[in-house]
Length: 143
Image (cartoon, rainbow, N blue to C red; front, top):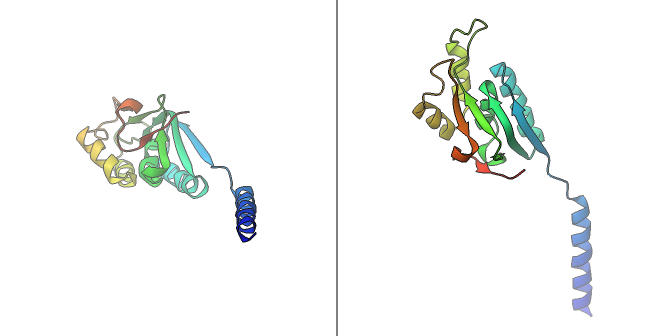
């Protein structure tokens, strides 16, 4: 009798706890870039509010600051996701060293190493592309 009561109690507890479980909040990212500081601020908010970030398309320029502003273990990339790195620039497309350094400082160490090895922030044009198939510092996910 005690065994049956224990099993029923565990079953009821499991059902109650399942009712309290919440769905995972996922932020899908496809972004053309823009202001670096604004992106860092936005990704700090995303990190606080979402369980996972999915790179599902283009992540260009300051969008890449997600790779450190959000912990890498919370980010995955779909087969159609890719990154476009380049140095920050002013409106006339001249190099902006301060904003470029801000981007670099936002990156996780693994990303910073990749950027340095590939000279990805040394010039405004052309972009340095990193396609999903070549990404090693975040996990791959399906849609």
